[in-house]
Image (tube, rainbow, N blue to C red; front, side, top):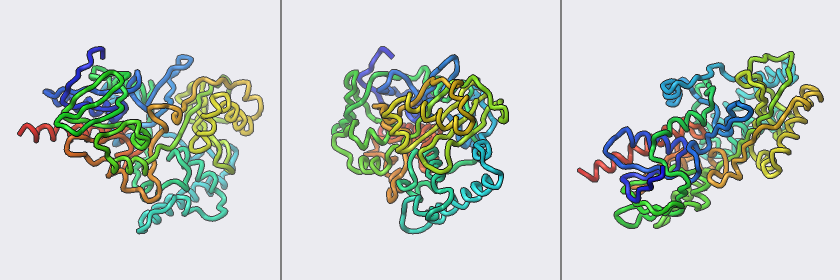
Length: 420
């Protein structure tokens, strides 16, 4: 928006999934002036679709997780977005990668036992790292760790068992044909969003909340804060008076890292289903490995997914290093000729993104209560949202969206109480 109001009823900081949901809820309420303040020049936050060779590539959020209860699934269909209902067959990536049927069955059984071990550990009084449930010297320990860097964006030794056990997943995972980021950008249309308006300070000492932004100062009766935890913990956004409990909660919920690399693929894998959704894993013997989607949606692409400290190192080296590593693993799986069929298209670098500093949140051991602490309102005037504040759908786009709607409703209720 070109018009930049200096005074509104509710200011929303951030136009990611949570901020978009908050903006839409406030707009639907009517009679309330609102402004969404976004640091970037686009909406969507960590859900971002770019087009390469005419193909949509989701550099961030991709999956409509728990699609059968995901609030964004019906919204997508209402807006005419085609959803890809074929579920990902993640369990067979070992077979596709050359493992025997016995090995795959052993892995599936071990994985189920691993999840139950985390569940039992979470029921104990003391929180502890998820790595503590691993069998010393276990055959699949490296793959468990690699899987954690893809799913949780962090290694098992850094992950709270209590928090991890709270995550809910129905196992129904769909995708948006035109891209999840495209969906969010569409949902953001017609919202009062000021782009390039990074908020650096929130002064809540007086009757009004005063926000210092890159485009000027805004006064608001209420504020909804949806920025990532890394921004709060690093005090890129400061509060006056300071909010030490919020900073402590954010520090206990750091952002892990999960990056993607898209490779154009003009070859074929004769022994695999070329219609799409074929999954491979580079190595089962080390956690520094990638997961691969071959021809997602049947498109001429291989999508590479990698996380944790491994991803951080590759980010620093750049897309050429990412592509070289992926080519080596794919050549080991499918033969050296595949190298000639791969072309780097795009890659994410979420750790280097100044407005994210990571991909999605995880709770450190001993900090499983931090999500509720971060979500709690301050003085009935400042409300917090984002995937990190979701008790059961953290790390997901729809989890963030639900919290944004919740925080906006809290702000509306607070305004009504003030007027009464």
